Length: 117
Length: 115
Image 1: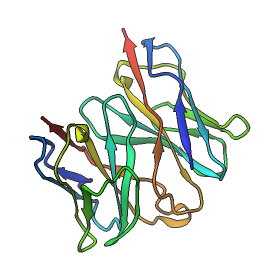
Image 2: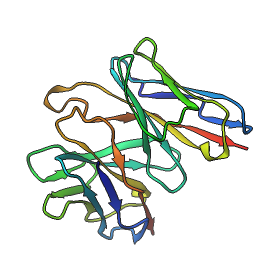
Image 3: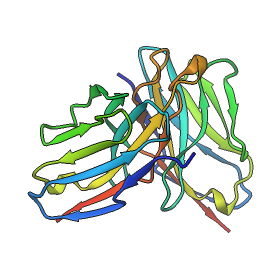
Image 4: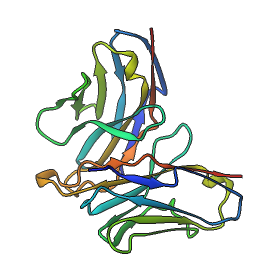
């Protein structure tokens, strides 16, 4: 069990550029979540997948954001035409079904810190 | 919809002193409750959780939290803190009986331990 991994750990980009982040969940975890954390705030939910199906998207996820999980394993989060307000830590988490309280614990990755200049 | 309020953004305490980090939530349905900890330059780690049963839950490193439904609270306590407890602590909720979908987090409380 190697934990949730995210790549890159840091990304600096210029306003207007596109960026893509990758998340590799814990092996065999079929749920994968994306959150965004801005400075001094708690994480905010963006979207989640069960296998390859995207089951919920937050209103925070504008049309410039798109997330995919094509084979039900790793996921990518793309931001098009980045804005300075997109600067944040992007967190990925995964979970699996474990008995009665299935999916109750989410395991988080280290995050990707995005800075938009 | 659920919401979480952590009443203190920063809590400074002396080493070996007791501490309480306050968390209140709002929800029209039953919830699961969690405390996550984020050590400097590390990711979020689950500290403890309440799903059902005993309202007092404990972590392996001496923290405990008590679910109080009437006061909609889930305060985190430790009787004696250590320097290593310095971190940011987040309270979170999710809807119960829904396969625990999204987590709704509070703003976080930064715990600073002074020697």
